[in-house]
Length: 282
Image (tube, rainbow, N blue to C red; front, side, top):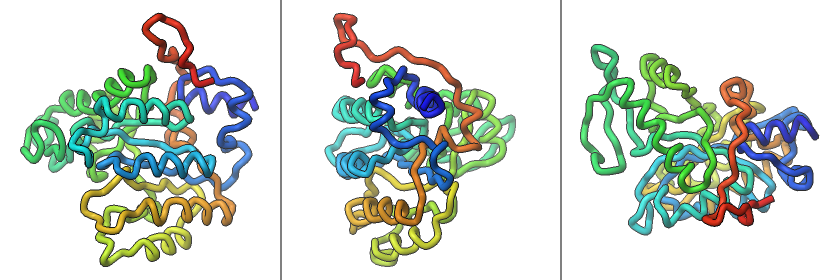
């Protein structure tokens, strides 16, 4: 039990009660076949559905945050979604950076610079030249916004937009404290592929057949281009099917590649305006 609580403290930066630990996802100490379910932000329409499924199945996931356009015309880290992110943090999920404006690396340039292009924010679609310091600043912005919304810090991990990286980009990110998290080949769940060519039934079958212990799985909180949404049809059958195959679910901070980079730092709980802790979820 003490080891389980220690893992949760790493992930959430909270002091967690034993009663809460008994009702949460079992620790990887009791699971010898973990998989790591991760979500990048998106248009957010399916976010409440995903929350319900994860809660019903007792699964904790890892979320990579960018401030992307939503179906309601806002953005995924705006005030409309602040309560939702707070709820997800309270439920024990963990969070990391996906660059604030969903910025794609395009090329390395001389003198340690990069050519990049954002797919969100005020410079959406414009090619820019960034220094390593510029990229580090962009990595930090989701964490700053998340702390404003929840009072909690994100993990010192990131996923580049589209998974596009270079050795120089990784080195720049590591220099400012961020480790990159990709996904496993079988863990590419295909929710951004055209549904005409890759129907949900095919994606589900392929995932259940190919996913192996230790794989990092990747999906999104809504993809604009897919006509037949992935999550309503696939997510819960996938979780149920993987459980039947003997897999369990762990958050990315418990992955052996990334656990050494996650410090055991206790963070203060978000307090109300009168400095009480009446909003403490535990």
